[in-house]
Length: 116
Image (cartoon, rainbow, N blue to C red):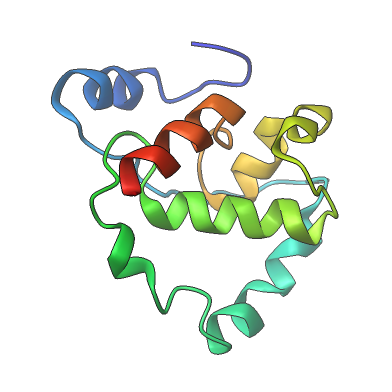
């Protein structure tokens, strides 16, 4: 399952029947990169998810909304290449999104190719 995976049941269900992850926020103390959550309301007001309906074909554990928000978090952290996303703790950013971790690079690539 990989590092920082805590939703084993949902991941198995996603691989077998195609269900998506449940976004669940919980209390955390000392969450690195937690300040990214302050930018989310402003980005939503500017229309971050305005064209998300074009990518509704994206199925699996991560929905199109999860992919968009995680990419925005990477941009806000000034990570300009997906390959460099491995340098940050995926579990910490995942907890900021209400998941157990953010997608890996190959997951991003697979989601983009399936949406096109």
